[in-house]
Each structure stands twice: as structure tokens, then as C-alpha cells.
Image (cartoon, rainbow, N blue to C red; front, side, top):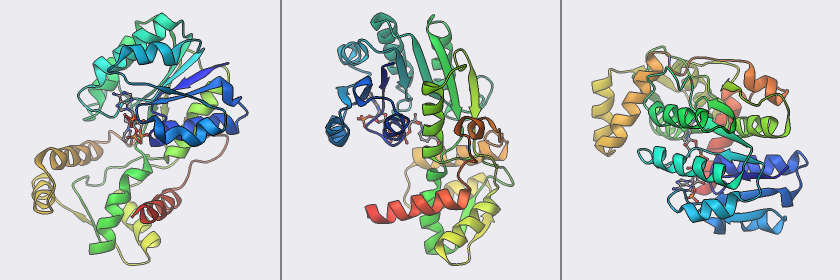
Length: 291
Ligand SMILES: NC(=O)c1ccc[n+]([C@@H]2O[C@H](COP(=O)([O-])OP(=O)(O)OC[C@H]3O[C@@H](n4cnc5c(N)ncnc54)[C@H](OP(=O)(O)O)[C@@H]3O)[C@@H](O)[C@H]2O)c1
């Protein structure tokens, strides 16, 4: 088996590459791709093949995908540009003779109103029409997304949001990467679409309690309206686009778009997913080291 992983210069893709090696895939059978390939020097030193993968430069895709059996297509991070980028990746996979694509999507991408969903839905549709063997991994939210919330809680003792009592079935990036590895190295996943999540869908009250435990200080959840949240974010210096995105996310959460906790990721991993407080603590410690 040879597998090429896009986005390996990012958080999730790197964890997938490391997980494949840990699972016993030979380094020479793994291609780690991204644009900032200087970030992959340590993997190259371990024998992993490093390739430039730039969705906007199809020639890089042809080179990187040549000879691969499996493409792990980690969704790109340039929101608004991902449909043509993912289209280029799927076309390159077809041309290169890749057999199977494993794609990281979003929860209930076919029906959800989640703000990030349209590009994932379109990508799932083009994959379905591609004739390739496809496994879609609809990843719920990363626990690590809430590191900034912890920063706010550390400073103010508050988690401020307009998500009401909505729930988030998050898991850590390492959990989701483990799901990718299980699918790539296991069998029976061809043609399947999985809703992947943490074992437990938590509320912002639980987020505040977890933040308090990590930070060692009282933290409470202050419910605000969408307009109040937007005003607060703008007053804190965020730009309109970022503030609007964060408010839209909380509105999605309030409407239940991230509330679906399944046992599918847990089953793929063969262990429980990482509890919220443990995932937050690790991410907080890592972000504190980065500062
Ligand atoms: N479920 C969630 O909570 C959640 C949250 C945020 C994002 N996501 C999605 O999950 C993906 C992986 O998450 P992550 O945390 O690993 O993100 P990340 O650390 O930002 O990594 C994004 C990766 O996408 C690559 N990329 C972006 N544009 C590209 C392009 N034009 N051509 C080739 N590669 C490109 C980047 O490569 P270079 O850096 O080398 O350019 C990087 O390796 C994200 O890209 C996004 O689609 C999910």
C-alpha cells in the first residue's frame, strides 16, 4: 500500500502521517504533502517521501500522487477557494490512477446548514461522481478550536457565547487522525461515509467547567445574544469577517449542527475519544509553550 497525505504540513495531516508510521506502514510507502515542505524535514529523515502539494499547481499534484494507491485528502484551509482546489486534487487522483480517496469532511455535510458545509458538500459530490473508491470522514469540531476561549476565560473568568444550550461533540485532532489511520489501514471502509465525533456532546456550561479545571480558576458561561456577541468581538478588536464567522458558528451550535455524538470514531479507534478536559489541557499547555 502506498498512501499520499495532503495537508501534512498542517496539524491534522502531520498526525495522520505519524499515525500511519506508528501503525506499521513503511515510511517509504508514505508521501507527506503540503506547500511548506520545510516543515516535513523530520519526517523525511525518517524515510517518509516528502512532496510539494499545492492545489493551485496541478503539476505538483501529478508528481505527488503518482504511484499512490490511497489519497488522504485533508480538506484545505483556504475557505472560499476549496471547491476548485479539491476539484484539482480529485482530477489529479483520477489521472494518476489512485484507487481510493479518504476525505475529511464536516458533520452531516449533505444536509447541514453549518457555515463551513457548502464546500465540503460540493467536494463530497464531486468525489461521488469521480468513479474513485471513496471514504468520507465527516469530522465534528476539534477540541483544540477552544484554546482561544480558554485564553479569554483565563483573563476574564468567562466563556461568552450565543450558543445557548447547544452541544458540541468535539474530539481532538489526534482522535480524528486516528480515525483516518484506522480507515486507511483497515478494511470494510470503501464507499462508506462516517459521522465522526467525540463520545460526548458538551454544552458551553460544561466548556466553562472544563476551562475552570484546566486553568485552576472559576469560569462561568455568560449567555449573550448574537448581536451582543458580535459587538463584544468587534470591541475586542476582531475584524468583521472573523466576528461574523464566530457568531455564525455559535448560531449553528445553538441549532444543534454539532450535537450529534456517535460511537463511530470510538469504534474505529478501539478506545474512548479524548475527554473535553483532557483535550483542552493538552492544547492549552501546547499553546502556552508556543508563546
Ligand atoms: N473540524 C474542525 O474543527 C476544523 C477546524 C479547522 C479546520 N478544519 C478543516 O480541517 C483541515 C485540517 O485541519 P488542520 O487543523 O490540520 O488545519 P491546518 O493546520 O491549518 O492545515 C491546513 C493544511 O492545508 C494545507 N493547504 C491549505 N491550502 C492549500 C493549498 N492551496 N494547496 C495545498 N495544501 C494546502 C496546508 O498546507 P501549507 O500550510 O503547507 O500551505 C496545511 O497543511 C483544515 O484545512 C480545514 O479544512 C476543521
